[in-house]
Amino acid sequence: MTFTPNTANSWQIGYQAALNRVRSQLTHAPENFPIRLAKKTSNLFRDRAATQANGLDVSSFSSVFEVDPVNHTAEVGGMTTYEDLVAATLPYGLMPLCVPQLRTITLGGAVTGLGIESASFRNGTPHESVLEMDILTGTGDVITVSSHENDPHRDLFFTFPNSYGSLGYALRLKIELEPTKPFVHITHLRFESATALTVAIKELSASAIFNESPIHFLDGTVFSPTEQYLTVGTMVSALPAGKNTSDYTGMSIYYRSIQSLAEDYLTIHDYLWRWDTDWFWCSRAFGAQHRIVRSLWPKSRLRSDVYWKIIAINRKLKCAEKLDTLKRKPPREPIVQDIEIPVDRLPQFLDFFHSRIGIEPIWLCPLQQRDPGVRWPLYEFDPDRLYVNVGFWSTVPLTNGERPEQGVKNREIEHEVTKMDGRKSLYSTAFYNKDEFWSIYGGLDYEQIKKKYDPQGRFLGLYEKVVEQQ
Image (cartoon, rainbow, N blue to C red; front, side, top):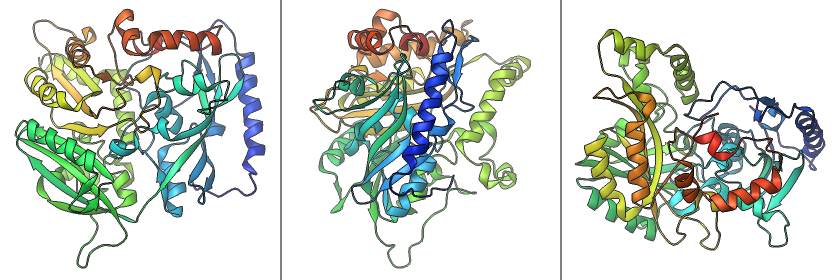
């Protein structure tokens, strides 16, 4: 999508018409089926049960309405992808405070389902830079919510993150932006132990300085217990003499460069999407990292949403499972998870993960709540504590007659994360019982807000959505 700046808030006329249409859709939808969005794509990794639902057409809310380069804000439709949002803001030398790794993640999805990236150690997660939202509630009302103390709906503003559409849908969001520079200077630091890595994460996150330069981005990659890296990124205005930017949108693969280069330079655009071309490292499952296959694969199709479509086809036809059966291989359990644990528990968790799960590489991303005075009930952290997101996405072979649907390994990970006072992102399959789930994800707060803004239960409840997979 090409962004065309609107003048004199002219976008509000079309926006109001779109609001009227979506309100009408909800009002006239049969009450015996739950409400969902009519979306063709998704970045969720949990299956939906084959139930009937009312699909709301929200395609009118998939654009950037306005960028304010003076006040560093943007008015954005909730269904706008970060790819389109970044394309609209970078020409002004601005970007969102946190840009999740995959191009087709939507702003509304990142806020209601959480998101993270390498600026999260200083900027937190996407919902923390939201100034106000228009939320479509189960009553058919569209309510403008903010954090202002005199806002009668501020309870919905703070409870909305991690509600996954069970409390409503964000149709418009006003967000903060921050200045960028044209290039990012990257330094890859190697560590031979998780303990040394953890010490460095704490020191770099606290100081936000490396080699006398500010740290704008910080994440990590674990290839084995003795080969792990922190990648420090600093935005710069110009390239040093004799230096060029790397291109990881074609034959070269970004995550492999971490092992071979001590430093690197990317444009700010390419830095933000460095993981998308190969879906971190998951493109290898489709052969896209084989040199011959890659040379034939159209460059424009080396992107996460293309791989996601392949995954969807495989889920429908069960090609991988049938092939494993023919080869007499054991069944494999999908493990696609992001978890957050206190930084001091990282060595302990990695020891557990290497010995019990064995997926590599692993992604690390430090994060800390941006404003320690705020409480986000459905995904609550200690605001004075640094956490580390640990991401792992693959399958593991099962033994002793175990079946993938039992979630044996996923349950083991959930138990370990809870024991370490951590949290697990809910975009993927979850196995918690109700009592455990609500003890972690703000049960009392959720119940009160659900009754207030969706008294008739037009939207599926959070537990039903993310655990029972309806």
